[in-house]
Image (cartoon, rainbow, N blue to C red):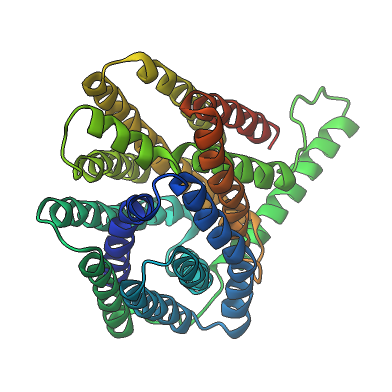
Length: 400
């Protein structure tokens, strides 16, 4: 039940994720892509130190509920103020402040999952959480489709986003509880050290006996893992930040209603839910790293595949983009479950916000670069750039 508040929170952000770029384009279509990039990059840059701070504070105080409540309540209040202005600069300031407070729930959520469930169930627990909240995101996208079809004003749509976040605050206040004991992450850290030492003793004893040793002692390359996270997030943001505009233009060319953008992202979210379900059922630590590399390089191929849509008719472009986005959502779900589980093993207590910091660094850069490339050089360059960065991320995870 403690996840229920997160479900409503994700509903609000699912609606906002597509509505806000389209709203910005409606205010200033000529410079809209630049504004979208600045909005996203500024928000993510401000969220980077905030993620680390909230992660440090929640581990330091061993209190997690208060930061979750702060995140949801602040989002509700700030989104309410969005209804009062169409000034891009004012909205940018509000969005930046909201991003700093919004990330307060991310590190506490990860710690709650890792402390409430044993290590063997981390991947399954993260998959269930992500799939459950992704379904909330999907419902939010559906809400965006209906608000578009029925002609809701922008103020009314922002008010709906605010109300959903307030519902998340109330439900979290009722159901979220701080763990009484915190020891699972420390046990995992001790297990990894003992396992490495045991393998070292085994290799040394075999060498002393004159036997040939095939096994290699190798620690996880944490720096390569962190670099892979940043690169994957960078490629994802380069591709996805301007994507609503790409879909919107294709829908306009095909004379489809404005709500088509929301409908397509519903299917993208459906692909992610399927991925979370599969990740939860087939989680296996022994195959985690090879699967992670396959997921990353597959996303690169899908990014390159978007180039095929550029020379198609508007309807065919919509069809191909929809299929690719569904596969992208599926692979992203597999990726996030795998990396979240690995990060809670690799990142020590007190630095639980580091995962979100790394994702934020790549996201901030990509959120600015993607719309800038789209506005100045076209979507062909966007797809090529994203695909290349995904391949480089694959190399980083291979080193890891």
